[in-house]
Amino acid sequence: MTHDERLSAWLRTCPALSPQTRLESLVPMTGGQSSELLLVTIAQPCQSPETLVIRLEQRGKQLFMTPDIGREYRVIDGVFKAGTVPVPQPIGLESTGDVLGTPFLAMRHVAGTPLLGRPSMHLAGPLPDWTAEQRRAAAFRGVDAMASIHGIDWLSSHAFLLDSASADNALDQHLRRIERWYNWATGGRPHPVTDQALAYVLANRPAMGKGDPVLLWGDARPGNILFSQDQNVAAVLDWEGAFIGPRALDVSYWLMSDLFHAEAIGVDRLPGWPTEAETIARYEQVSGTQVRDLDYFIVLGALFMGTTLIRAADIGIADGRLQAGSRLGMDNSLTQIIAQRLGLPSPPLSPDFIAHRNLPAGTRGLAA
View 1 (spheres, one colour):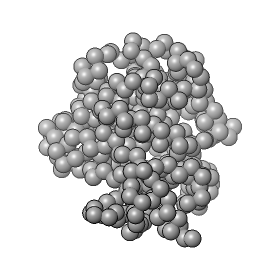
View 2: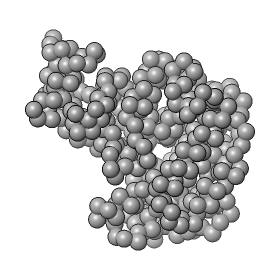
View 3: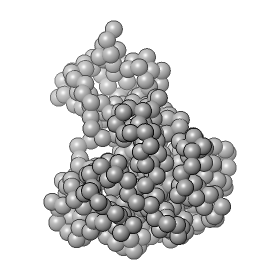
View 4: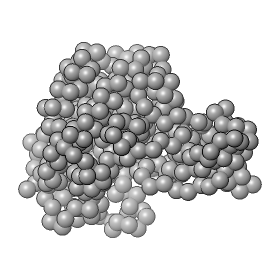
């Protein structure tokens, strides 16, 4: 049987679909930095054709140490069943790899627009075309969705995300995972700025805040949201990094991502987009909980994203897209953010990072 025939047969076994489901087309989708996405069109009796999205588990040249599409499926399924946060409806999980050569999850396609764009969402994508009021509404609705994630009763739906039976040391569990992943990604090679960031987050772990732990999105940024035409949240995406921990981690990651799209590359925020203080105030108002230790968690978030760049650099070298010795994983906006927060000398932006982000030649970022 071909891949298409095996996929058709598998789709017919999904309880959410008809046993007479037919595969009409299968094409790759853009996006999905940490896993490959496929857009599937299906036909069912007495229904109009509809589209599904298949997310493949990455094997081999992956960003993360232990990709687990089954874990991600359970996270999405739990959020979907909670009914308080818009996510794509899960359709099924194929965990053997027998159908497409690697495990995958299938979910219903959601129409919407992401705030993607290189070099910055403030320069490309839909954000420049919106009014100041629309930008502000979209940003705040994204923050509201994050607060709704934190409000999910994770003990009932997502307790499986803990490494042990106790949530009291949830942050310690996360830090151990970060340390293992970072050491795997670097392979013992020195990375001066991120090495110091890892030492900092391990040595300065804050206490859990009031109302913690919560279900964390894990990759809380505007680029992981699909917005409808009226700037409402159509779907929250990318749950690969979800875990249980302190809410300030998601809030800080959102702030760090915002910095990544603005000051860190010398770009002005568009009118209407909230400031850091406004974002924090909105989150605290909606959640009814104050967040603290944000500087610590911004360093942790920059370390997380910086580690993905270390892996991206190694993958790029292995694929021949980057030359050996590329400093993409060392000299970038994330290492500049870390250096600024920890009082370290700021590295320059490497030419490979400038090209990776489609930045103008000579961009200095926070080193300016």
